[in-house]
Amino acid sequence: MKSNFLNDHTLIIEELEKSIRFHKWNYILPFLPSGSYLVGGYIRDIILGRVTKELDVDIVVPLNAIEIGKKISENFKSKLIILDKKREVVRIIFNHISIDIANQVSSTIEGDLSARDFLINSIAFLFDKKCLFDPFNGLKDLELSLLRTHSEENLLNDPLRILRCFRFVSELNYKIDHRLLDFIKKNKGKLYLVAQERINHEIEKIVNGKNALGAVMLVKKFNIFGSDTLYEDSFFLDLKKINYEEFNEEEKEKFLPIFFISQIFDVLSLEQLKFSKAQIAKTKLLRKWHLFLKNKNISQLNELDRFKLHQELEKFLPSFIFHLPQNLRFDWLKRWRDKEDKLFHPSNLINGDVIKKFFKIEDGPILGELLQYLSKELAYKRLNNFDEAIYKASQWIEQNAPKCD
Image (cartoon, rainbow, N blue to C red):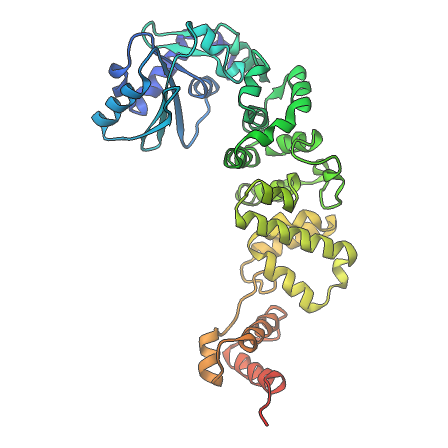
């Protein structure tokens, strides 16, 4: 972002109007009454040159937001959601575009802008006058990469905004004003007044941002979610000492979020905040094997324990690699990348249906144990082909299947 762009409102307005036309929501403008204006993240992202997969548009109208929303929805065959009937806030969905229309609450535009979360989101584009309105110097904060608020009460009106600070650290690599940080420390407990679904959504954005590491380190430093002793748990690692460059970009995108979530929350917190069963299950497994290796050196694992580790963690093993000794991490990652490595990607040469048909056995524990045995033999390179698998299966059944008198 060039400072001359920030200082030239004409350039910003040109980019705004170009974007509105490009994304084809300029067709709704005739339905907006005089005095309507665009505000928030759409303007901020245009100024920052930031491209997002989904577009969120926030429009404020003087009156009758629901009626206006219905007319737009009917004319363009789009989905209409009434978000707040009393305050008149509606959402219109156009393909990848989400447009929120709300009534102006204050008697002036400046009054409404003063109630927004952060100054970087308090910049308006007045449709009638085709000009920017920036009464609180939000453009200056964008130039400084700084998060401030006009009033701390704005954050208490919706405590999720406390967490949103860390989302902007993650997505934009912004600094948080020191007075705002002091306020967050004192009021972080109010986050539990927020619906769990909204917290989950914000956490997902935090752990998936380009600067997720910096944001997660701040969340941990200020113990945003935990009890006083949460981060004393030896499961949590010193995130500053980890070499994340061992991962390629695809691996960072896919596996670092799971790792970061496990470093912010313990299992109980995930359950209380109603995270998905999949995320909770992964965190439980990460903790299980961390504690297992805490009590036993990785080189001391017997074949079965090592096999079970890979079997349970295979799909997200890179999220666990940071819990290993430094000298093993790259080798494990390299082997995991090799889809033909049967220890790191357990599989079988024959499936259960073939075994059932070949040996006349039914579904049950015996079949499961046999399949695991064959998979382990393959992982440790003691199986090479179908015939060897059948032979080993025959031997195993002879030794382990219950005998009838």
